[in-house]
Image 1 (cartoon, rainbow, N blue to C red):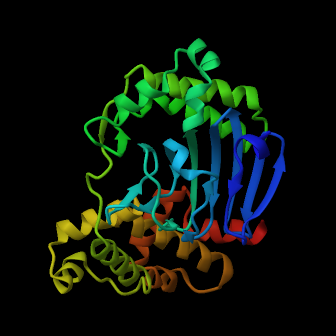
Image 2: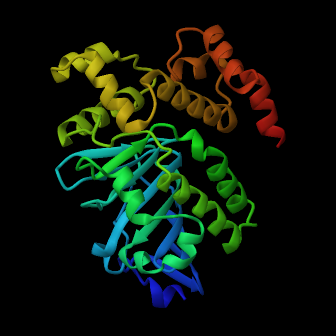
Image 3: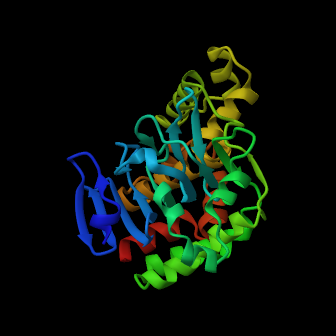
Length: 318
């Protein structure tokens, strides 16, 4: 049982419900983690987060965790590493690592869905089933974490996309059982063992604390008042850095280009105003940062397939 093979050690504010080889861990409305022991000392977790920061959660005997495979389906996940750098995992990326976060985990867009595979050292002793699938954990570690790398990003993640999408679809529909999860996980581990992956260091593009703070400050300045059409060039100049550097920091933290991120924020606010107020469309356009109602209407329609008027009508009749 999960309670015997791999106990969970978390902060008291988490609520844990255990059911055989499965455990569900929640932190009020901020996050839910569904954890399975798919094989002795190999754990699989679904991570759903609706918060900007969550306290670190670990398995017992964390030092025995020799590898973590972490895939971000939606949102970005940031961890502060042991060498003082921030590494951000963006949507669609698969990270392989043998290091733990030093502090809490950060979710800059306040929403995250991801999966993780934890391999603990004692899994090396259980060779029979792994060898049947030609999974060699030590070989996998050698391939993925050679040249003194502690964290790598898989470049050709498309190798795993169908399997990962199947896992997430089955999970979201509530029809994922342990046997299916094992099969999909073994496929991922087998592909890693086979050396079919192309890798780059996870520290390429890692940020210092000051660089992360610059990205956060820029996000605040750009979104706290959407009517204020502040430019990246001016923000970067005030920070004493180039606009290109600031754009790179922003993309690393928030997982999107600034223009894409702002477009989503403007659409979100426009939808709220259309649904909750009776403000004229022209006023809403101005409030979300558009110089004219026509430009706002064109962007809204291109994004959602509805004009602002049609969206308002539908929201009031829903």
